Image (cartoon, rainbow, N blue to C red; front, side):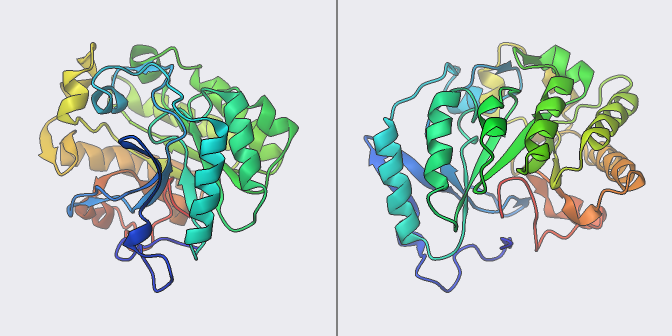
Length: 307
């Protein structure tokens, strides 16, 4: 089921009354992401807030701002609390939904706990779990293929990865992990995000695209360029990644529009040359104008976080 930009809450028993579940103090284990400003394309989606933080120290990470610089992994809920909230939510939602477990954390930073969460989703056949990660620790997924789990890997070219993706596995190792879960039957998605126009960026991103498509065919690919939210920049110890910004948008600072267009066109054309279906390419938190200029349909979106 495809999520459209204009309508999230369809004519079902699902209404805004059920926009969050599992309140614990001031937090919600499950909540709807609906913060998109009018000028930016980002469909609403469900967050599964099973944990907070991330072990990888990416300089550009928005979690630095979200958590005021304190990104150390935290696991505030028991598996019983999480399971109860998931099951309660399932009872409330009439239409099939995807639950993103990687919005406020890396989904694989605690494989033992994520194993149990993924198994909860296997007890039903309507809703799906989305795992979003920079990890290559996918052994538990490969050993036990699951029908209700989607796995998405965040990738980058070699120079941005070395400069700003501290502690994260090498992108080629992430591609190997993506291939391994795809080979056993998981729907496997890729995010090439954020794309930086570093020296020789065309050669390096050409290499990463070729490495992906040579290994396997992703079910969809989402492209993004850096978003410089003020809090992210404020709490980033290394702000060298911000030097490419040239304009403001509804979602923080961005690379100048003409350069973003060039970057996206380059990736879309390379993917097209390798016979990757353009309808399975989307942009992350981009302007409506950019979607239009690139000939992409922002009214029927197939991006990372939605069905």
